[in-house]
Image (cartoon, rainbow, N blue to C red):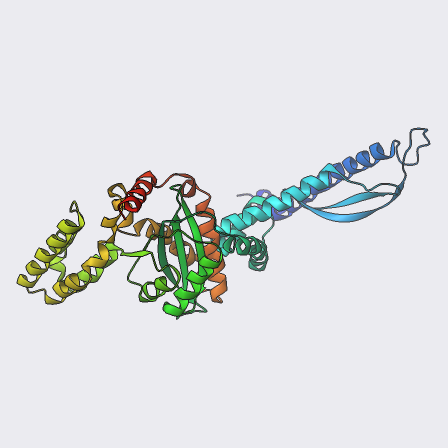
Length: 399
């Protein structure tokens, strides 16, 4: 390489960052000039004449201007918004800005509630709008939607709900697992559609916690409950009689299977699972009860004494669904449909990690449930309730 080329190599140096900054300033300046020109044109149209123009068509005059910022793809620009003496200056540009600002807020909230972490939200906003929002901004935006969630959470419950599912979500509060839970109830109305009936913070998964939740549901109008489906939540079972004494309780058969499997060697779980499923596949309550008796004897012969004792003592709690229309059995014998929803909620809460307090977790869970309720989940008929109505009429006539 010659000395001349070495010299040229030192002279011709391109600073990409400075060029980008310069181009950005040029674009921002052009956008700012164009928008302010549009504002002036709107002001002239409202006044009926240009600034300082003498015209018999003039209906108003200028009274100065004020500055306000506007976020654009080119960055922040300064708008000089005209003020008029006789009328309020309302511009389509500012209205579009407001709509865009609201749209951004809604997008941020939707991203957070959909499961995007706060840090990821910051990255996305910087990529889309050239402005990086802080975690504090996301938190403040969420507080806005929380007000609407509270209204939704305490809305009146209208109509009858023959079938109600109850479940518990345990989460990490303030970096450690505490005895705090979120209680959720979903019901199938007399029209056959599912709805989220309630979600509340339960300080303990005991009778006091469930009693407070059922009281909350009752005060809001929950009625017509005939069957409650849940895991073996002792607090819930004990509380049901206080608020819905005529309601039956169905123990989720899937959760019951898991309880039995805890007393079965892993090599025999598959075999025992087939035995238990055979009980719930019978054509009637009497047939299921007889089958259960034979299964208990079989488990005893297999030297699975604890499993046999559990089936003997509690299998009846999983057979309540037989008292209801056969077309409903597959939906009533387990609360797995609600469990699937809660898996999505758990996935979302894991993104957050540890919540600062129980209310923060409650709001996020409630927000996700409200979102799910507005999807196909809540707009698709879940059960045909004519069979239950027919059964009720037959029971009344036979009484």
